[in-house]
Amino acid sequence: MVDTTKDSSEEQDMKCKLLDEFRCFTFSQAYYGAFSILRKGIKNGSLNTSKGTCHHNTLCDILNLPQLPSPARIMEFGGGTGTQLETICRRMEAFQKQAIVSVEEPYEEYLKQYVTTIESLSNACLDIVYSGPIQDYYGRSVEDLRAMKAYPERLQDRVLALHVLYHAINIFDQDMDPQKNLKQAASAMYTILKPGGEMVIHMAGHDEVLIGAVSLKCLESLFPNTKENFKIKYEVFRKQLFEGGFVEVLNTSFPMFTAKMHCEEVTYLNVLSTIEEVGASASVPCLHGLWADQSPFDVRVLQFCIDYAKSEGYKHGLYRDSKGMWCFPIKEYYITIKKVERE
Image 1 (cartoon, rainbow, N blue to C red):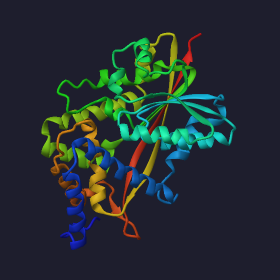
Image 2: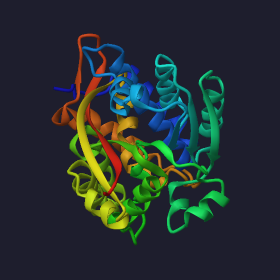
Image 3: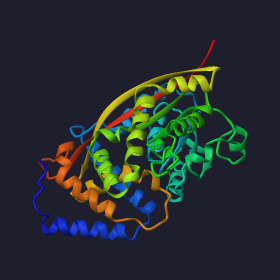
Image 4: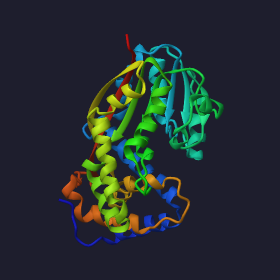
C-alpha cells in the first residue's frame, strides 16, 4: 500500500518545484511536459526485463521487418521525435533494408527532432514532412492532401499510428462524435496503405489503469462536463479497436478491400522516482484534448493528480519497489490492420 502519511519535507519541496515549473506553462506545454515524464517512466520500466517488456521489441516483431520490401515506404502519424522510427530503421539494417519515411507531427519542436533523427540514419530518407494535426485530414480528398504535401505520392507498405488516436477525439468538444472522428482518422491512414500493406495502431487502455483513474477523477472535479465524454471515448476505442469492431467500418468504406485485424495486448510497467512524477504522468489522458491550447495552464490539474495518486494510487496498482521507485502497470494494445484486395 502507498504511504499516505504527511509529505516529508523532501517530497513537499519536489511538489513545489514541479508545480512552480508547470505554473509557467500553457496547457500545450503542460501536456508535452507531462507526456515526457510518462515516456521516461515507460523507458525506465523497459530497461530491466524483470520490470516490463521492451516496447520496441514488441513493435518490431509486429511489423515483421524481414518481410518488408526494400526500400520500404513507411508513413508515421504523430511521429513525435522520431525515436520509434529510428529503432525500426536500425533493426531494418540487419536485414539490409532501406526505408523511405513520411511523417505527420503537429508539434514543431518534435518535428525538427524527427527530421534530424531520420537524416542521421544511413538506410533511411525522408519523403513527406507535414506539420499539422490529424484533424487536417478529415473530409479532404487524396488529391487535396497531396497538394498540401500531407500525403506521399506513393502508397505505403506500413502506416503507423503510435499513441496518436487519443488526439482524434477531443473530450472538451461539446459536439464530440467519437465514432465519426475515429472513422475519419483511421480511414485517412488506411487510404494510403498499399494492397497487402499493414497499418499498426498502438494505444494504451488508459481507462483500465492508474492514469485513467486519476484523470477521470481530475476531470470529475475540475472539468465535470467532460467526465462522460472521457468514458465514451474509451468505450469507443475498446469496441472499435481493441475488440475489432472497426473492421466492418473499413470494409464498408473501402469495398474493394478486406481489412484483417489482429489485436495484441501487452502490460508494461511504468517506473518513476517520485510521486510527483507519477501524478504528472497520470495527468496526460485528461490533457489529450488540450495539446494545442495556448492559454495558461490550470495548475490545479497537476496538484489534484499528484494528491490523488499519493492517496488512492494503491487501489490502482501503484507501489514502491525495493529500490524506492514508484511503479504502476500500463495496459497497451497493438492493433494490426492488413489491407487485402478482394477477389
